[in-house]
Picture 1 (cartoon, rainbow, N blue to C red):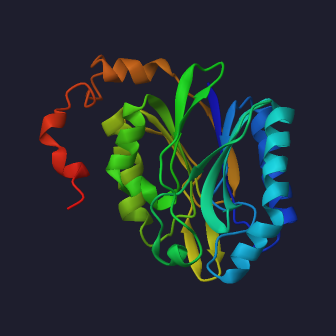
Picture 2: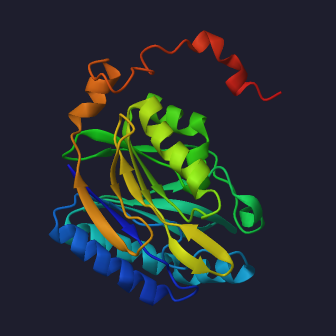
Length: 270
């Protein structure tokens, strides 16, 4: 299976232009044979904090989701994209899963970062979904959630072999949290992990870039560095099962050797 990642800096409020830019990258990924492509967090509105963000989401959400569905169907590819979502008077920082000729599925960010709590409601459930053709399950997280081991582990236990993560991850924590967590979540769960991050500086935020694909043994298969662009890499999907069965020396079958009876504190709310 070939997967693609897109890395760019969406301009604040320039939704149509941001979609057009993302579309160019999707065209390129499609031409290179990508069957799944991941776009950054809030790729259409840009990432910033303020009431203007909610208004932009309200005005453009329907057009953006329709555009994603058209892109997925037109390219015959699956797209995971970070967008703002209005619902029942609330706003969510969400990841849209768009598949050709299929109903859209939505994951709402469950762990909000700093002032995001002023503008977004937290989601209340995780999501895995089947990818047709590849015969595997995909899980989704968003940005800062890469640092919560419980989330990726829960997705793996639900059968996810691949975790896609739209991001607007900051440069300050890039060399520490990002570099460590992206490889650790893949290795400890024997999953492919795909991130699509923003890059550059906007509205006081410096974004880290380094959108990447990490293998189930923690190897970085593709990294886009600090420039805008996209990339495509082919995945050996059978590697997930081989790692989980303990057949790969570079990995360890952590899922198989879990002892859940020791982990009750992980779900103890007190």
